[in-house]
Image (cartoon, rainbow, N blue to C red; front, side, top):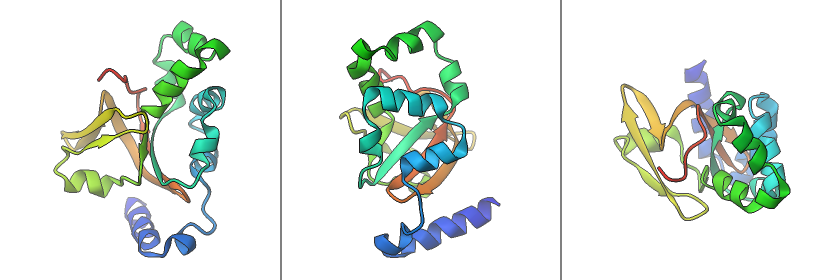
Length: 163
């Protein structure tokens, strides 16, 4: 199945953008379709950044699963979802968004030491350890979910902006 996904991703990347994205859903719709990101999508809506993720892109989204959000202090997460904390929540989520499309092959091809800038201007470093790709303090557990305006990498924790 992974081989088929890799072949499909390579085929889509070789097509002109208008053809490659025809029929694909945007990053938000792709995330919704998995059923793994209800907390992330709720947070993105509350932070007012859904329109950005539905925009032209391309974007690479390091998407924490619902299980990853469950690892946060529940009081902290509830507090972040309050309207008065909208900017702080948006900054946390923007830490997970990279302008451009960064595929797993790009990360592995760099020897695993690739550093990129996220949309808030911070730095994220991808490293490799024991065959896994790590970004910040999170592991990429599923990679290259291709969308019409970017790609999603599923991560197992919310990435601390201070890392």
